[in-house]
Each structure stands twice: as C-alpha cells, then as structure tokens.
Length: 157
Image (cartoon, rainbow, N blue to C red; front, side):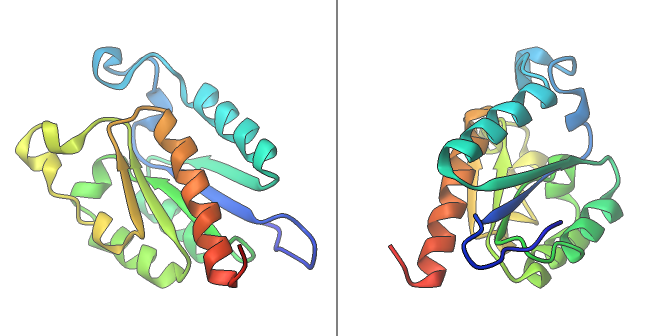
C-alpha cells in the first residue's frame, strides 16, 4: 500500500471478510444480488469523485485480514465488513485497536433485526463507527465518514 505524501490524496483500505466473495450468489434474498466486484467498483467510483484512493481486499481467513491491517502503512483509515468474524473474533477487534486509525465497520444487513447471535458484535466496539442495514450503500457512507474523520483528525475543514 502506498503512503500519503504531501499533496497526495488520502488513501483508505476496504477489507471484506469470510463469505463476502460470494455476494450476489449467497442468499440473495438476505444479502442482495450485488456482487463484491460490483460493490467494489461503486466504492472506487465514489472514491474517485471524492478525490481519494481505496484499496479493496477480501479474504475468508481471519489472519489475513489482521495481516492487512498490520501492513497498512500510509492509509488514513479502513472500512471493514468482517462478516461472521464480527460475532466471534477478539483477535480482529484487537487489530482494529492496534491499527490506530479510524475504522468504520459495515454490515449489509441490519444485524440487530436478525438472529440473536448476530446481534452481538465483538469488533464494532473497537470501530469508530458502524453502518448496518443499508446494503452496498453502506460502504459509500462509510467512505464519506472516513474522509470526514480524516479531515477532522488533521484539524482542517
């Protein structure tokens, strides 16, 4: 990942966890028909409109998501949809904290309107914000939130 130098646009990371590579095919009545590739294309297009960069990645492996957060030098923040790891992963929660920059957690569905086990989010407590239930549009809102958090942290408006 490339760092931000003077005058270069902010860079953000977008991580998607287990099973999100199957978007559009996996339970479309729940998660919609938008594929991960389509979602990422929309996110990159919005990033370009905002004058920022976004590096999108997906893994079904918890450790890979943690590695990417640890290796993310030069990015100003991250969007993360941890998928099912949101309900189980103390390690990913710790990685959000160690990341030291804003993280906006995204869930396509309203997790609080689903099964009781999905209503407990271990990772969200370490995120700066949570966007849930807005489908693919949640990623666009998360990007705008990260940009706002970055501007505020720099002390500019």
